[in-house]
Image (tube, rainbow, N blue to C red; front, side):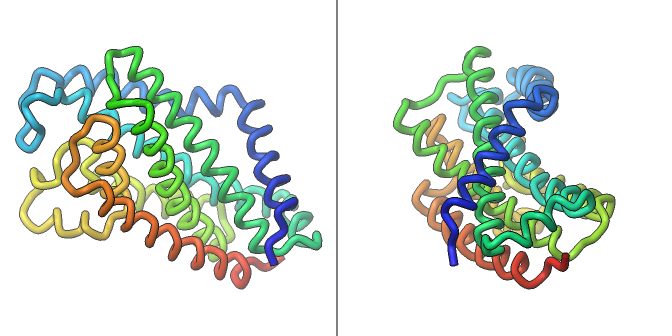
Length: 254
């Protein structure tokens, strides 16, 4: 049974944690900012095959950095849950009348909100650096895409956290997974520029469709129709939430 109050309380807790940890916010945007400055501007004069000639590399790269921010921020939710289990806070939540599904949804929505807020900060910084978006309506639509991306990778993190006991194991596994996911998404360069055979794996990468949809909405360039990207993301997010709910309900032992 879904407990809306429990979901809201856990979401609010994440918002309070986010607002109070200024270094966490700085740390989350520092690496994307450095990459925007050194890679986005450093390669802006280079003609990269696959990028339309009327689109500069900086404009092409910004949606990829947004996807990276969402990916890495969302995946850390599982690490946070593991830490809370070690310190006993998770046990205190689990023994409340709130269902485990409600707890999972509260953590998912809280993590997704913080990930989107950090992505919005990146967009604002990029706009100060001359990045231009298609329009306000497209920006709002891109927030929905960001929500789907966040939910997918938060769910992935919760599934891993439900099966692992050690924080270091989680950190090592996610590091092994996140960089291939990021590099195979087309965030930094068109997928067709990769060696023969490797682009095939990007078809199974949810971030590929997320970055493509954000790019299409913000700068009007996408490899696939935006509606196709969104359908894939919605289906994937639904499946991942169901798997996460199952793992959270049956995998955690307190």
